[in-house]
Image (cartoon, rainbow, N blue to C red; front, side, top):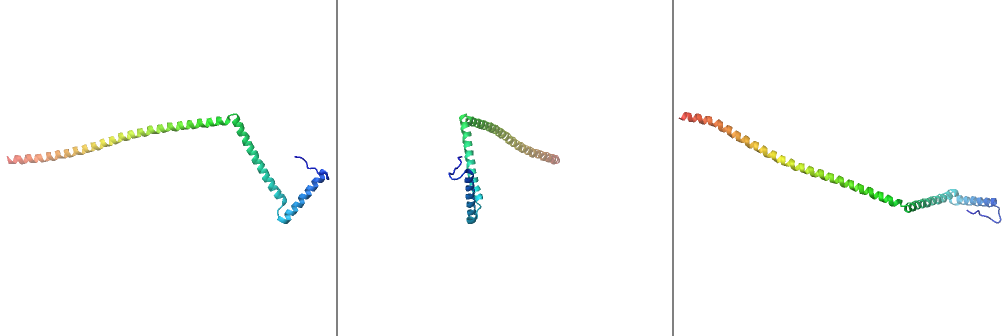
Length: 155
């Protein structure tokens, strides 16, 4: 930055004049606005510094992006992401196929279980029918001796 030169003053005198002017301005701010001048100065300085930092960050980001684009680094990254996505989709499809096979197997087992349940119910009914027949046979057998005795007495 170029040094300000005043034709009337030497550099040290110019600095003294600037400091005096700043002191006068500070006194005016303190007296009229009750705001310390240097705190106001630092506020503007901080704002300017933040703006410069933001500009530097933006420039850095732009330079990194340009570098990556120039050497194809972002396209490689995109390819890697696409490859990972395809792999993940493939893994999920395989898992879905396994789950589908397991569901079909469970449905098949369920059909078999239902068939066995029906067969069990039929067998229970057959057992009940046979028990009823057996009871009928026992009842017949218990009635026959009485009938035989009755017939013997009649004859």
